Image (cartoon, rainbow, N blue to C red; front, side, top):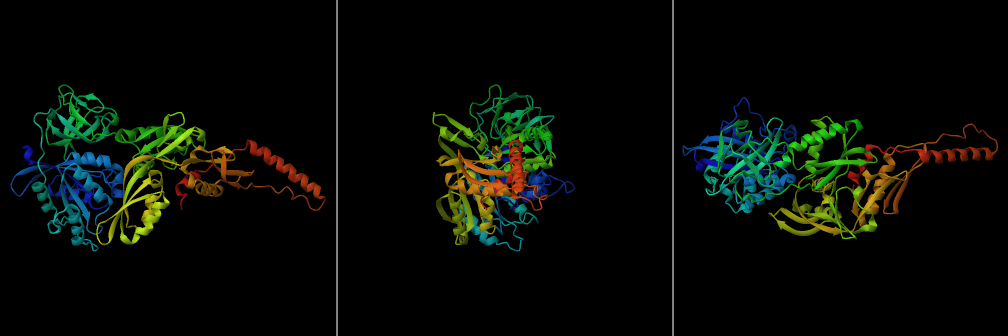
Length: 599
């Protein structure tokens, strides 16, 4: 089969617009998977992916199809992750393709990630084939949605394919359109091997398995290879293609998509976006766009029972074998003992890792409130990066604190503009522009600190817009702010895991709310427990957890008042001595109180 008969494409869509269902119909239509082995969301292999209806890990599949022109074609479908946290992985998957099917739900219309993915595809200069899906739903408005999409892409709305991926309506015609419109791969005959790594996973027997698209040259099992960015050298353990299970082949040529089992022991040595070339006589020109995935959100993860610390470390090691963007380091907390400081791509990535630790490794864990990475410029000119409020140096040594700001786009019906504006400004957002999609829907552009987004911004946005808004965000810059550390003292002992960094204007209100919550959550002791919030040396809020008291006057019926005073004074001294040696255990619910301080 010649390179002219190869088509590489992907499917891009907003969450739950039918991307995985369309992939299933294409697999059935091309008879890549037999009816006996077919199941819903076949390419989503994780139970979490099926439950949440969102692709977390990219995958690829080779399909063979004889088109209406009588020629047999090899069609490589690269399935992309479906969440904004994995934008970099999506961009690498798009780079491995020449075309993209843009799926838009006929009842929902264009949403945040629809546009985000369109712009990513246009940056890679892909041929975009827009389709309107779910036309069989009672709430479907295919003509209206087709007009929206046509305006976005500058196409004729009458020409847009209308399909139902669930029932298979229009899918064969769409596949014919892919063959006709998506160009065949192009290659540079002067270049030696260049292969793009668009994803990878770890296999205990074969090492890291790199999912690759051969851009130039060819590769076979006897070639000695190297990775451009990491410099790792290896001889392939195995070379193959996905159909959809892994099947070995002798070689892969330019334009083809497959995998190389590298034998490498960590995913860190074989990163997404890297270029594989020959170890001897390889290319000097790597493929563009490689970046190291950088965590944006950090949280402490601790085992509920101290004896599970070793199990938690082993579980994180195993998860990191398949996910190079996950970073962690040991951390000790006075309140929670031993655990790990873990870095994530975003809040959704953090949720997924937490659920996998609990479900796949049967661990009871406690995650602290998420924080972001701050740049601290000290008076002596040094710059320090800190990802935990507990690590913030003394206020007197700090010149400036810089925090990450994001550019966000909120897609919302026009009637909710006021509510969204109010929410964004309350979260320190800076209004940028308003863009009108049509007579009823707008895109609001804001700049907003990441620390304000990561806890409850998305939930509140859904609440104030009755679920109609969708959100997309990108990192913008680090910006100086008037930030302070609010510390919590329980019985005059600092609880490092409850510390938080916030804007000075919000410090008093957040400290007061946290103290009020903790007063209700900390169990009563035999002595009075003061709970305080402090900024530097200044206490900004205080509440006392009342003591449980024995009624020492119960035996005094009548008699002189001095006897009662003597007994109360004796009790007071005992309480004072008990307070000096008594310790207060802070319950787990107290750490979760940080997540809902703005309610």
